[in-house]
Image (cartoon, rainbow, N blue to C red; front, side, top):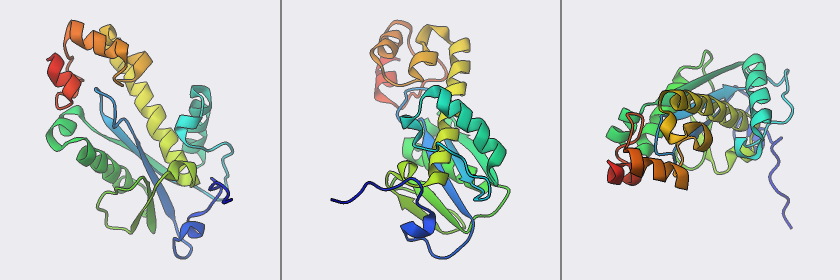
Length: 204
């Protein structure tokens, strides 16, 4: 029986060639009905290891918050970027996600030799790119990016809740839960809802 992939694997063990600076990229917020889609790019420092990195979905909110601050403190460099609701509605969610990823990579202070992107779709960049399915559970720099993107977006949703408390963004983070769909039906969309998504369009 094959063992499960280890999060401790380094990029060269996954087929990336040679030594160099690797950036991990992941996103948060493709599925919600409201708010921006967020992407993060992270270049870790092997001399400053971070314990407990994992796919952000497998961590508790408290663990994510702790790791968020540690990643910011210890990474060689990192950048969080987003694509707005208007860009999502104009481009579609996939293209907006790739746009946010490109902004994150292009905003890095250092130029990576290789970019490792979670999933099977990658933005067009001026550096080599490799996609890794379930990369956030296999590669530390992608896991770190997943944490930054998730925590940043959750904080944005807390701000959305303050501005639009009728929808409960602090609880569901914009995902189409029964409570969110009920609020949409009762109150209609707010300015932060994605009008190109069917449940929002139908409620509007």
